[in-house]
Image: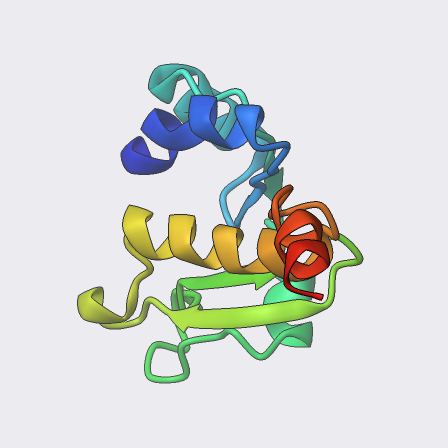
Length: 125
């Protein structure tokens, strides 16, 4: 979360949004968000409705019902681009991987990504 908070200024410049969803109650999320200085939303799934719906429950601990930490990278229409399984530390997305994923999505969806592409194509013909 700390790294996402450090990245939030870059994300704002790129018109990219981040949302955190946790199984903590709303007041715990609010305190954590404030402590981090995060400006992006923290949503609560304290009743674990979406944890089950998205099949993100860690099945080996039935008492505490922990979730499998997961990063969903989405297109603007909320279609999934990529999923990172953060269950094991090395499965978590790094800040650089997030940058690369957001760059790839931007290149794909923005027709004006390369302002020189049309000029180069026109010059070659």
